[in-house]
Image 1 (cartoon, rainbow, N blue to C red):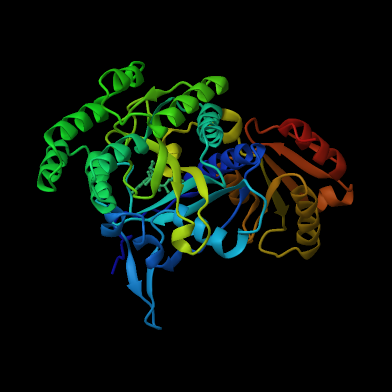
Image 2 (spheres, helix red, strand yellow):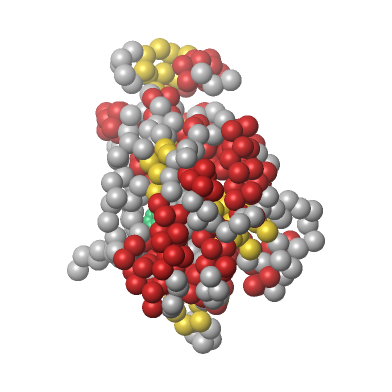
Length: 431
Ligand code: HAM
């Protein structure tokens, strides 16, 4: 019986895994250069952590189960709620802002398609302690600089859920209903937005204003929002947004203002942003990053603490990321014990192992583990695209030398071990 992978999951072969690892390391380095430190949280949590505030959409997609002790658990669909839970449990007293990043797998029971999986990875940051425009701008600029360093062309859309929420609060709509409107806006279900607002008795003028507000995009959006007075007077959200946009200019970050961004998660309270791939590679699932300002700590038993963060869809970035040729070059050496036919020549094997250990101080080095002939060992070395074979045989040992073979040309020379190491180092440009 052949057992298939579970739907929406993937295997990663060595080549793909190598690329993902290089990508991950690059992202880590950047986040750390901005002062963010890595944290880790469990893969599963009490389901309640996500049911409290993440919103209906996430709940429908959650992998939930009961463990043998009867606890109601869930595989994490995202990492913001776990990070804030960890903050409340472990980090409340730490100096603010607390800047953390994470890289981990998430699970959502979605309909799998290109770039949409049931198990996927997120690389994200959370800045705990501020949702001021300075924090918002920093977080967006960090996301932007990560994409720039990866050479990925993308479009940043910035909005503010406060504008829509203020408008609905002003019209005396209850919070739960506001959350539902936000979710419908996020899904782009315009007719349903209208139908739902009619159903809950929102006035015609308010509905019209709101529809105009969520359509506003680009340079003129703020001006139009003022002119039409479709936002509430003296809007705090608007002031915050204007300051954020000014700060994004300081960072040299190009953005499109998009007042229709609502985000699918319920916890956002302020600025929200989404980044879309610009090259058309990903198709419909082209959102590569999402984030914003939110408040979750009080919900999990802490003091109210404003926070701002984002998460990249790592798998989507991996799809877009192109390795440079220098990343592809395998720096690999194969040590070849040359034995007398059909013997397990202990002296040669012992020396070959010693030499392999020496080489491993600098390079990836493999040694035969199948007692194969010289020609079989060399064809394996060629098959794995190793650059060098180091031949260790009786004759070489008598002279305290090895034979270094350049696999791409077939040339070879006899050298002392130290000299051989230096030759390979020079070739691989290893100091
Ligand atoms: P999100 O927009 O739900 O936000 O997810 C972030 C990113 O994860 C998306 O932009 C997308 O690239 C990727 N993603 C989501 N679902 C899938 C999937 N099924 N397959 C592949 N990639 C996917 C959050 O999760 C928030 N926690 C972000 C955040 C952090 N907000 C504040 N801090």
